[in-house]
Image 1 (cartoon, rainbow, N blue to C red):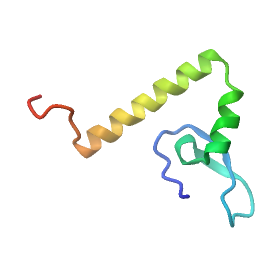
Image 2: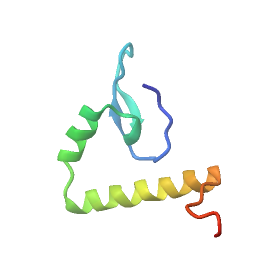
Image 3: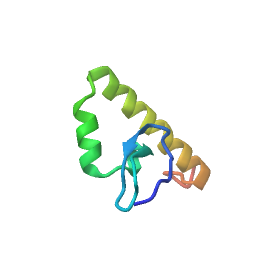
Image 4: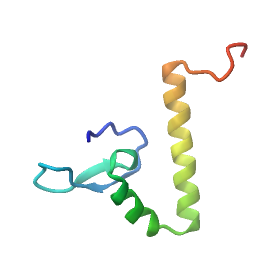
Length: 72
């Protein structure tokens, strides 16, 4: 695992070989940590998470020059 820090949604994760937990972006956490954290969120927090992840996807796509249709 590595920390890429794309979404800006930080929770704490401790990877193998690390001495302590560190702020880690949601997408870089293990699935187990993601599941545990998601279970703690209420409906509005889940909506906010989805919007933040969507914003991150748009940013990455724009940065990489990814477009759905070449005609656009």
